[in-house]
Image (cartoon, rainbow, N blue to C red):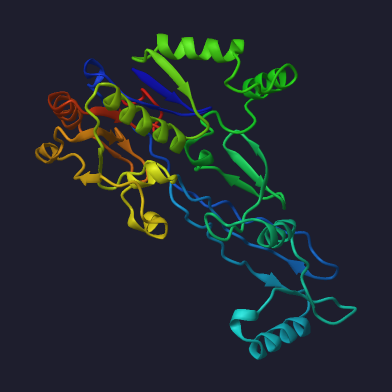
Amino acid sequence: QLCFATPTRALVALPAEKCAPSMVLAAMPIAPSAPVAAQPAPTATVTAGIASHVAPAAQSAQPLSTPGALTIGAATAAGAVAAARRRAPRARRAARIVRADGPSTTSPQSATQKLATTAESCLLNNYGKRSLAFVRGDGHKLYDADGREFLDFTAGIAVNCLGHSDPGWVEAVRKQAGMLVHTSNLYLNPEQVALGEKLVKQSFADKAFFCNSGTEANEAAIKFARKFHMSSGTPRERFVSFENAFHGRTMGSLALTWKEGYKTPFQPLMPSADFLPFNDVEALSGIDESTCAVFAEPMQGEGGVVPADPAFLQALRKRCDEVGALLVFDEVQCGFGRTG
């Protein structure tokens, strides 16, 4: 039995006797931050009522923002701004600060806007254009380059389970960075051995395999599954996953991911990957003696935070045993072992 562990998450392949889950989920709502007042310009009152939120978990949702009110301290200045707005196309309107001692000027870029502009010139946008830039975190709060405060409901996409700047975590990282950081898997170090021993003692696993990311854990599971059947003298090629599943964005894991939009630009992917309906016991007959391994999320994350029925998982375990297929539980999102 193997446990594929990342620095913060893990993917596991459960044996039959451990497959009796009870599902628990704490759902968190999304709440916008309160409007924040910007610094006023001379002789003018400027209120930047910006309401933003950080989108939850899995997909590439963009932050929402609505521009607030701009209040000018003199009636004549307000009239000038209104006239300018009527003359300019709506899409090109910019917030303007009107000074009593001079003409209208476009407001300077904020620190966040400057970072976003620079990023456009040098960074590849893997999730699309980004309009928020965070510089500091404290517990469940984040602060952007302009000092605005946000509630973090994303947690680094299911990574920062202790919150930001946790004192114990900070001290452990500081202490280790002062002694030894990286030597590769060519050598041992005490912390690696201690963590592996703890994982084996507190889980089903016989061995631990450390990875850098969730998708890498799934890639390793794909390779181990193929190697298992090859070593047994009966090579198998076919993999089975489930509708609405998400297992990663690298080529093997992507082939086991349901959403076509993620896969289309990178075809052809790994062949022989089939999908069955989730939580459908009758559909499990689609798993047969040609199946190398079945990948399942006990709690589908990006698929909509959908728990697997205990009866479904037990039937899945039984069917895999009947046909000699390996069963891989991808618990990168929900946290391994937390679903029972």
